[in-house]
Length: 70
Image (cartoon, rainbow, N blue to C red; front, top):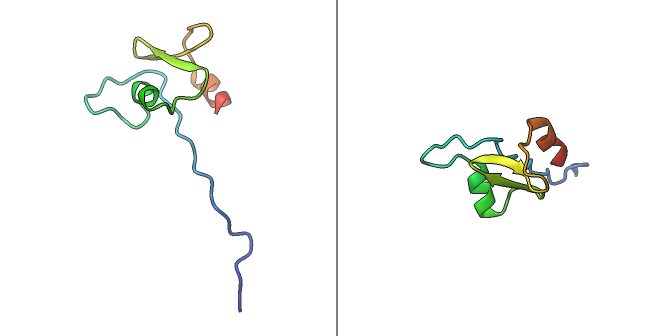
């Protein structure tokens, strides 16, 4: 009998939000507004005027900052 070695569950990649809402009628999967409503936005971030901002100081977030948080 052959057995598979090293087969485990693959971790699901977490979707990061966009830095700015694209204002589409049907919200896309990475929309910061939709993620805020669902509660799946990363900790320490919020949305103001359709733009993803840092919750501490209210400044805009860059893609580089967002990837560090994930």
